[in-house]
Length: 242
Image 1 (tube, rainbow, N blue to C red):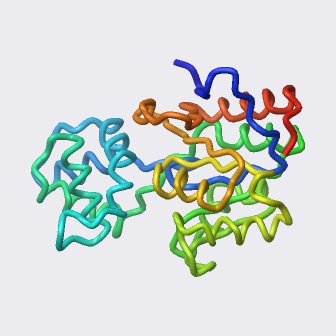
Image 2: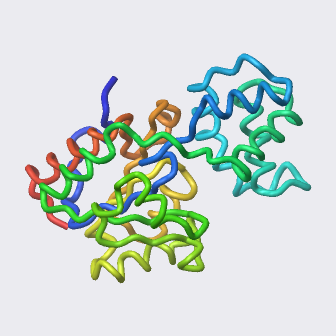
């Protein structure tokens, strides 16, 4: 499987900095935990990889206004259930527990540290813009990732969350860069692609681990983090300077 997809003949601008999401981009949900919680709610047999892929696809539903009468987690849960062909009530209950009560994000991407170091070796500054609960610095410390980043913006600390372009602009101001000089890497269509575009980020890269979003035109995708280093090297070789 190709690790990077982009419009034919299109070389991205060379980034001075690359901004990253964290959850589902650098650190992933533990699919075995989701599967176990589904089984505890009467829905056994869901494969761990399928559970994580369904959650990635369902997360954008949190921004929708339907189903009526549900909060963001409930709307995500309904989409999650639909993706897996499960009855909604137990799936929503299991996912709510995973997202609000359990330590779900346990799996550091195997390529995260080496990818970040490779970018720094290319002279590209990594930064973080992530929706979090105010514990982002501690989480990055937990995974020994904090030292790779020059700027870290936690939505709770900043008082603004993706997809609001304001959170991206906070990071850009701290970096002292214009959006067109930067790339943004994340896994969600609304929060990351739409939010990054609204903020004027020069290049959006969608980390599509499960190859769910290949139908979206004009969006660069990677299915493995080393694909980002490939894109960055191509941009440097193409001398399309941001």
